[in-house]
Image (cartoon, rainbow, N blue to C red; front, side, top):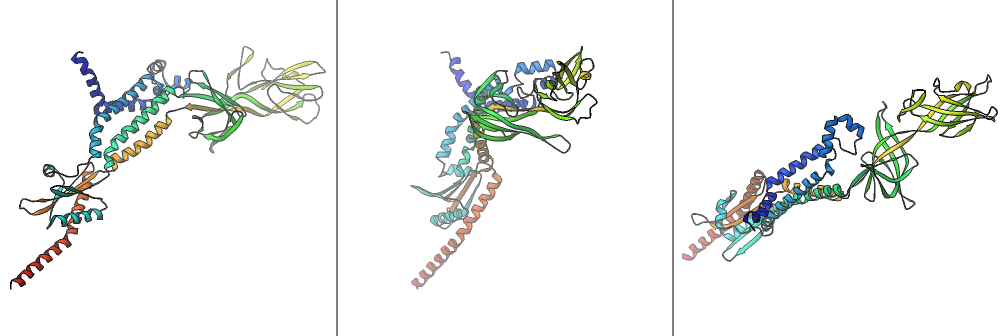
Length: 488
């Protein structure tokens, strides 16, 4: 194999494990993720809204590049896989040294280490054992555990706190991998769709973004839907009362609102929209005989295709409802499904005359036959059907995403707020041959605060040493005094 071919995997590995590569890739993920929150995304955004928001050329460009569905494009999934590989490579390359540092801490500093340590102090002592004992008490007073290190030719103390802080960066790496894993799984195996229900109806057919239908193993029933408004009439919230029907049995119920979904078997049902279907549920009107009689108007209620008797000879049937009508070329058309300009078509039938009359409300000149009707009609109330729009999502990777979010909070806490501190106390001889306690310390971050902590340690050791120094001096004086007496 040629040398260039043999070195190619090594170069790829070095590039992947480089910190610069990881930072650049993570920045790209953040940029495209931010773009996904700014650019309208399909299928959550209606096609008409997309066309109103962007020019035809811009919309074609966004669709071709996948920017209107960023989180499900192959190139974004490939980018997340590449970031994950970079994190794994960087961790594998650096973890062995970090683990050795964590598992086998440096407890007995040699002379070369003591000379170059930036944070250190020397405290004169009369005796090595007295000095180490005083240092142990000082650390204990400050809440630090100590370990006495015994070597063939020396004794020393070692104390540390929060060694786990050294693993904080790898906790963050693991959390990022979990988050990216969740996104990748959702992008490959997750799906989103839409379900529209009217009160009293149920369905297990979800319409996906490509227009196909997906059957789920249970049904969702809508028991009611509506909206709450503010005093000025603006919408306050939409709500829907849903029930899960599985195997012919009602399993659970929940009233959902925006951002509070119904969750069952890994599927989430979000409140996405609310409105009127444009279909008539009930029409209430007063019917009055057209003749000069003084009969009291009777109130009748009609549903679509329902026939109601007005008297023994006459009946009326509701045959057509148009929510927003317009007349063109002598015919009535529906302009939209919004109930803004409604019209109803009824047929009044007389058995005696063996005739039927087309009645339109409101009257439409040239089309209605209202003048020939034996009854006149005065509409009182119009109730149209409601619907709730549910966004349905299947996100099998969400457990990994949420686990990663929790883990990254823990990791960042260790990285930024938990400081790994180490202290050493070693009896040594100074330049004049006197015994001193060499005290050294180091911290992996927040050096200013550590300097204050180190100063407290040194002061506490000196405080613990004072009684022993006094006792030692008193013993020496007693010994000298006794020798003088004996000499006499």
